[in-house]
Structures are given as structure tokens and as C-alpha cells.
Length: 305
Image (tube, rainbow, N blue to C red; front, side):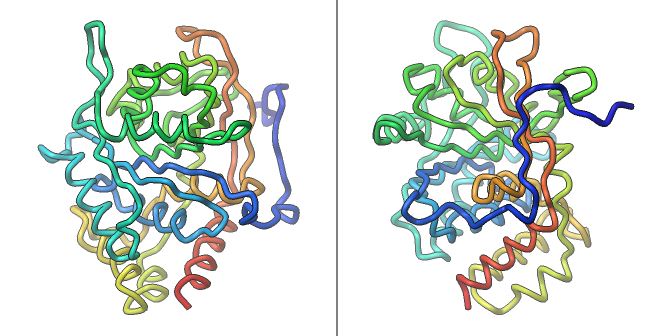
């Protein structure tokens, strides 16, 4: 098997040159879109973003995961409840936290968008972003809210930068795999993002995000009884429906860390699938999971010391 990546532009920064997070003077406007009630990893990623001084987090939207076999009848509302619970613990109920769509994009009709508060909030914030800048949107679940916003107002495409957690990618064949959890909860949403020619799209495939592994004993030792916010992270692990796991993949944290510390991740430009409008998008090819994990714990220690 060839080990070399395709001969396209590749961004690679060695660990020793990773550098600091985004400086406060260059604060990135960030919107988080999360299916928080689905898995254990979302709150870890959300906390990391909210405590980062180099980010200007403008909102936390709730996402559905309605077609999962594990889904409750109210998956988006469950995510909304957990978002508000977490914001309350952090003393950040002032942060806008709009509800997203309760179900995936419509399958047919003239209007395929789900008209939710989250979609319109994204549109509002995209237009409010100063000229020469982009609103960064981190999508930790199905991309229903982002795709809906693009369908409602296509003019926002050049105004936003999307980091989407999902898919797989085979660099040997240049082939996309779209049977992962986030894509399957709204396949059309990924199609909409790939079709948006002016959209800057960064994709974190599960083959890369899956390197981010945590153990429960380490989480308990570092977080238990330090602060209610941190107890919540432990409780979320221990109270999940598969609470018996001693080790978990904290998928979502990888994309947030990649945004905060881009030197700990590598990206390459790849071609969209043949069924989509031909264009280039960014695909993450590797992360330094150990350094990202260390950065997460160090950031928590600084914030809660």
C-alpha cells in the first residue's frame, strides 16, 4: 500500500512548531452545532471551546440525531436540555443557544430546509461577521442546521467556514465513505455542503478523529469533585446508556482542538465525490492525539485552578 498522500497541497506543521492557540487579539468568531445528547464526547468539546480565550463563541446550537437506532423521540430537545445544563454550570446562559431542527432535511419538495431557530441564527451571525473575516462553524453531529441555512440563504456560503466531523476518506482511491453516524443522520445535509461552491469546508473523518481516546480513571482522577462543570463530564460518561466502558473515543474534541491548535493537525485538499459539483475541500489526514489530549487537560487546569 502506498503511504504517500495524493500530490495536492498539504498543510503539515510539526509538533515542535505547533505554536500557541489563536491569540486574543485575533479572536475567531465560532458557532458550535452539537448533538449533545447523543454521545459522551460533545460536552468535552463544548467545554474546550468555551474556556478558550482565543475564541469568540457566539452561540451553541442543538442538533438532531433522529434516525439513529438509539435515538429518543426528542433527540434535538434532549440535546438542547444538555446544552442549557452545561451552559448553566459554566455560568454562560448569556450565550445564545438556539434550537435546531427536530429532524433531517426534507426528502422532496421545493423547500428542503428545516426552518429552525439555529438555521436563522447562523444566517444572522454570518452576515454580522466583519468584512474580510469568516464565521467558523463547528458541526459535531448531523449538519442539518448548517445545510438548512445554506438552502435558505445561499449568500452566506462565502461568509462561513465549516469544520464537519464525519465521513471517511480513502486517499489511495480518492474515495469518500459516507456510512458513519453523523452523515447517516442526514445524508442530504452533507450533499448540500459539498454542492456549495463558495463554502470553505474542512472535514474531520472518523478514521482520524477516532485516534482521540480517553480512559475513565484518568477523567475521574482529574475532574471528580473539582467543580460542578467537571463533575458533569464524569457523570455524562458514567450515566450514558453504555456506561460500562473503561475507554472511549472522544471524537468531537479532535475537531475543536484542530480549530484552536491547527499545528496539531494535518489537512490536504481533496476532490469532492463525482456526484457533486467538482471542487476542492479540505480533509484532515492526521492529528497528534496525545498532544491534543494534553492540551485539553492543560486548558481545563488553567481555567479551573
